[in-house]
Amino acid sequence: MELSQHWRLKQQRYSLVGEICPYCEGKIFPPRDICPDCGNEAKTTFQFNGKGEIYSFTTVRQAPAGHEENAPYTLALVRLEEGPMVAAQLTDLDDQAVEIGMPVEMVTRKLRSEGERGLLIYGYKFRPILKAA
Amino acid sequence: MQENKILRPIRKVGIVGYGAYIPRYRLPAREVARVWKADTSGEPSGEKAVAGLDEDVITMSIEAARNALARAMIDPAKIRAVWVGSESHPSAVKPTSTVVAEAIGAVPNTQAADWEFACKAGTEAMQAAIGFVGSGMAAYALSIGMDTAQGRPGDALEYTAGAGGAAYLLGPAEESLAIIEASYSFTTDTPDFFRRANEKYPEHGERFTGEPAYFKHISAAAQELMRATETKPEDYTYAVFHQPNDKFPKRVASSLGFKPDQIEAGLLVPWIGNTYAGSALVGLTAVLDVAEPGDKILLVSYGSGAGSDAFTIQTTEELIKRRKQAPSTQEYIQRRTEIDYATYSRYRGKLSMK
Image 1 (tube, each protein chain N blue to C red):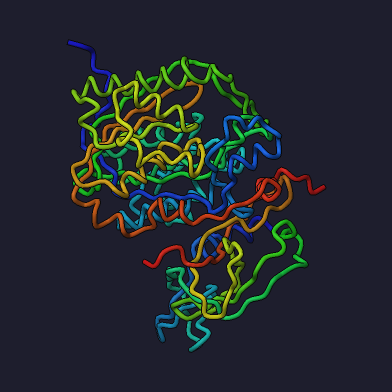
Image 2: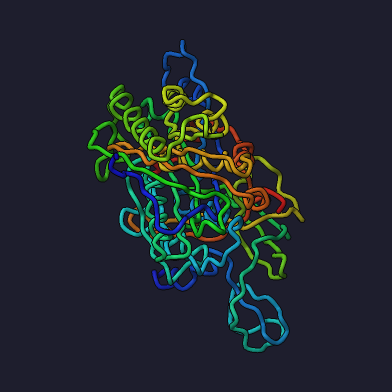
């Protein structure tokens, strides 16, 4: 991936910044400037709170390039509290069994590095909730 | 009259928010001893915190900073400095601090920089933040001390070199959960511990790291600060000293006239190891988690090379209600998964994959 692409995605990746639709108030992630619900223009940024629950999950053993050192890892579909679904790695699982419906929270972690000399890429993952706030 | 060596800002400054971070993995010292067939007659005790595969000083600083912001309850756009002190910045050139600032929403109207002074880079950043806020230049400044500490496999350092640290959001005293009353720095050129550029592991002077280094600098800093502020050890409810191992902080506390119960709450080295630039600062978070309003705390860091920063801090009524807004340091310590030396080797990149 190009440096410019990583740079463009940093806000949504580091801290789950999406958008809110000014017409139907739907919360949008990832941001795409058009509301997927009502089709109107939606460019107002919205900070998601990072809380959600597991909708589904799987274990990745044959990892794609750049992720080999982390394999095996758990990939999940997380339903955010505000509505949207995101695909992300789970982390800090220990030997804990993952279950559908399990509450999780967003953390910013190292996703991969572009080789020994390349850029370190950071972004969201989810983990079991550390503390009920 | 003695010359004034104490650092005090024009405007009173305090800690508006604080946050700890400790990764979940633990490597017991006995596991290091097993692998290196060390003499276990003096049974090695304790364990150290180890960062996971996807963690480094950037990710750990982000979480600690988010915890500090949760307690501070301020708009991160009002932060004018994000400073990270560490011996383990992930890139040699590309600031840790810009990634942290971006992730917490402090950009673009902010100063950002990475600090380096061995194990006291974090308190160094904190002292600078006192100046930044205390001069009126900024309303808020964020100082972080965080490390994934290095120790050569088989070296004495490997038993304790741990991972963790803390973030402190400094701001006006009126909004603070603890007021920083004064600070003092004591610095000399002392070659007790160093790591050359591009080297993975540090070198140290064995016993030379004790008397002329750790003990001399911490004692001088603490004594001068107490003299100038007209305080005595018994005026402090708590004291936190840099903790490279279990022995040094206990010995320096005792020689300065502090009792074991004054240092107990902040002495985390048996559970998380020596977190280098995070060491004294994460100890202070554990104290703030349990202190009562009005308690006085002495904080003294130590960085090889060498120097100590000493601070006298007094908690306020704000502490009680705001500290519950983020996970406590003990909650991070109790979130514990024991690993063996092989897993540790994998997590810390000590296995050659090609």
